[in-house]
Amino acid sequence: MLNDFTADYIEGLACGDFAPRPKVSGRLASYDGLLMEAIGLSLPVGTVCAIGSGDGRVEAEVIGFRSGRTLLMNLGGPAALLPNAPVRPIGAPGEAEVGAALLGRVVDGAGKPIDGLGPIRGAGKWPLAGKLQNPLDRGRVLQPLDVGVRAINGLLTIGQGQRVGIMAGSGVGKSVLLGMIVRAAQADVVVVGLIGERSREVADFLETKVTGDARARSVVVAVPANHSPVLRIRGALRATAIAEAFRAEGKKVLLIMDSLTRVAHAGREIGLALGEPASARGYPPSAIAMLPSLIERAGTCVTSGGSITAIYTVLADGDDGNDPVVDSARSILDGHIVLNRQLAERGVYPAIDLGPSVSRVMTDIAEPAHIHAARVLRRHLATYEENRDLVLMGAYRPGADPEIDAAIAYHPAVMEYIRQDANQVISLDESVAELTGVFGDA
Image 1 (cartoon, helix red, strand yellow):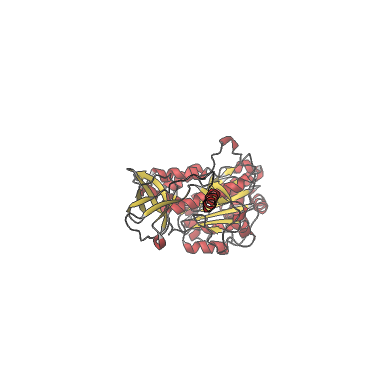
Image 2: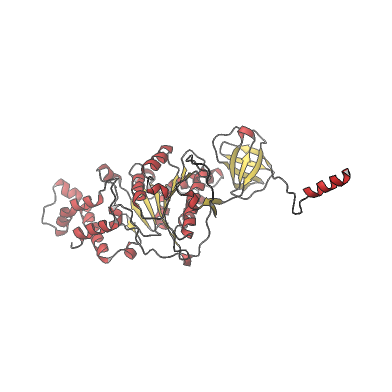
């Protein structure tokens, strides 16, 4: 009887579809504080691994291979690891949590919530690297987007699905201008990627720029500068993946990324750690080549009818407009807004330098009268700047040149049009009406 019971019990425990699988594990062979080398396991790039055990356990991501060894990069801070520490895979490469469950939430580069509101439930999945889109499925930019900034609405009109860069040196007002746009932008969803910025700026951005109604329709991915370069890149990919998923639902998405340069800096750290040769001002080829694949994921989608309007800040190191990141971004983006330090020093905010700034889709989304008035203002401003020194020194005699006389007469109106208080919101219709009213007949 006992034998019968034992046989029945064992048979009940049997599972017909059970297939034993070996537990993959390797050993840590080298660690220099950032880059790790493991032996004894073969994993695809992007796999997240746990290294060590107990309180000393850290997470790292596979970034490459060298001489039969797997190269990993630390995702956390300093780790008290010992030689031959166990290395085990804990996560498959490349998926981001997406969907309405993320609205109003703040996550880090690994997708973990950091806002103290508990776990995120009911989220969908989307590839971190995105889904390759047929170029013919990318729609044209035909509808304007109201961003609440008079100078941009009137002179550098942004369209739904456009990719724009805000380019400037440090401390000229990029983040303040982004905050003005986030508060006023007419979009269904706002996805903000704060990549590589100061931790203080993350809290400040959340408390002053993404508040009220804007917070309820926003998703924030925050990866400060003291985080691992792998997490900074993952943060940029995650923010873009979240925006792509909302676009696939047919929504108008505004993607804000501050800043694209910090993403390139993270790519530079990883490339140099892998032994890539430094080429353009210390940037390895992979760091610059990463930017087009990230930027090209934004835009309109003919299939779903949704769009991602992307605004990237680009830090010009040393105010150099020919910096490799600035130059690469300028060649890919559909427009760029250049901020000028001299204008900021004269108290003109936002300090938009209209000369080198351009929106490449403005002629497709603006009315002829609007375009004419914008060109008139630009002409007056360019004439005044060319002759500014002569006028200030008193070397110019009024009446000598009608164009210079007109530029001097219109200059106060031009500067008044560009200036705007950080808390002020001026709609697209108001911006166009004011522009055509003053400069439409000139």
